[in-house]
Length: 365
Image 1 (cartoon, helix red, strand yellow):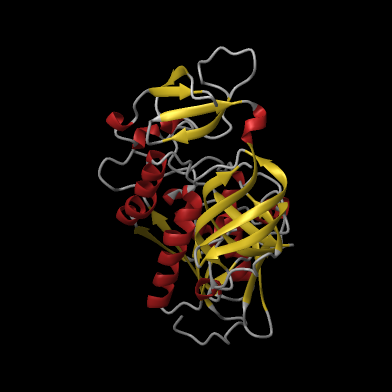
Image 2 (spheres, rainbow, N blue to C red):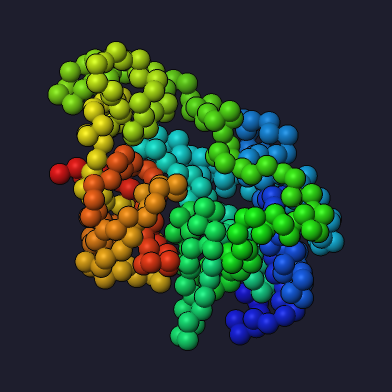
């Protein structure tokens, strides 16, 4: 930033990325109470041609709620339209990955390549010391000045999984004021200060999903019916477009079978779905690409780590192997169900996030 990195006491200029929700609002409130000079910023992603009319609100941000939160906190608030970048860096990637038979996680991509980068750029250009957000994660700085990221105190709300792409150049300029609080404590602070955000529901779905669906993003001539094959290559049905399916899915296949069948593979080259039994969903290892590590370097080859292959799944023990500077594999101690290409795999050493990548190939045996 424009100020010395040694400046870490009171009186900092802090830019808070505000969604209008309770977490970012309370983050701003805490920083104000600590004596910092706080301003808010909200990025709007929905003005590109053909974007749905969200009425200035989506499931992850509301311009009206963010502005109201800033007014209640008596801080300056700005809105920046980043629609073109969002479409280019997030939505196009999301659509392309489905076209390759993957099930993408756009939140990690947005955080890594867009949301934090834009806020940090704005802060740098406008003389702020730090950027703060309402994510449930914790940071510490060791004696060498290296910043380490740890899971939030509230394990049910911990968001390190989505922030695997942050490295030292970003972490050195970030603050996460609510990482030491539970969600109940965050709501209590908001209610105690009569903040409007305390009455808002939490967002759960993708920010651009409408009634849980995102197929409106895809050109209709690209969502074509195709064959459903069993594990032996026999055609046993017809699907209505790969974008409607993901690994592990059971419902909506339209197949009568004495044994429950699940999606175990998406074959984009043949526009086909592969189905199998429950046992066919389990994998002993995975490989991942687009790797990013918080310290800039991967863990030691053969290191024992913990791994999360989806946000709501518990971390499981595994062994890490570096394959190249941005490609790695993990061997699970116990086979894992529905390892899904396109999803994030996050790596941990106990409570500390080490980094992660995007699953590109699951290997069964």
